[in-house]
Image (cartoon, rainbow, N blue to C red):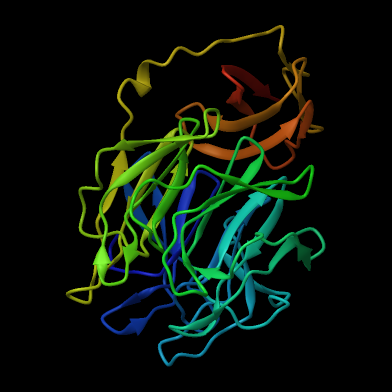
Length: 372
């Protein structure tokens, strides 16, 4: 990235990764940069209009990014929340986080609803929180959600995979760094303890979903920066070690996936107090040769060609579907997670040819859709 940062917030929408805020050389910054994986370039975007901060809450849903809470350079804890529109390149203030000031929360998005929990509202010894809330961007409202049935924690990270939300690691009220992994099922509104992270206990690691696995690595344990990385399979509830992160530190750095590509970088070195700007892409061996099945009997896309009223993606099989809309040169425009049927609006799309990719269980597919 053009400027080193740690504690930035990262969200992905419209085929770009947006990195906002964060700290470097003792200063918190309002700048935001967008990374384009097709051109491997960064571009400046509208600066965040609120108080500059780090370790904020950040997520994307419905094509927009959300950024709020966090801690300032003077040690002030924040509760304000903001929405970023990538089309208009503008920020709009939204409803505050309801419990008040908080930083270093975990978060994930399920079915268009953001879940946010944990975090810290004081100094190094807490208190760390165990509560959880969900945000509906359609109504700009917060409501209580099921909390992880354990101690309060901060510095944990969340991700979404196969229709469930996951939270791993962090530091608990006992002041111990932890390895536990929790899975949240929105259907039953319940948490389940999964196989713990096998690396050393830590907080503020990288975490992203890549090729049907979750990858967790780096982070810190007390005064130690970690570089190891591990892949988690939800299908087998098991972990396997992968090559260590080769960059500087990536503790409290950035991590994201765009389509079938995954990245990590930036971060803070606890020993030298330096922040970093390097970015790395993770390549899975043989990933480009994974066979894709076009299963017309399971996935239907209609009408095709589609008009301005949109089209439907429909599955004849059971289970959640992860589907993405891409331009013909591979730029991801949007993505969705649903069961059975999903209506895709086309009124904002230009006329032309697009690609639809999907994953449902072990089945992958690609189809072309024409918008006229």
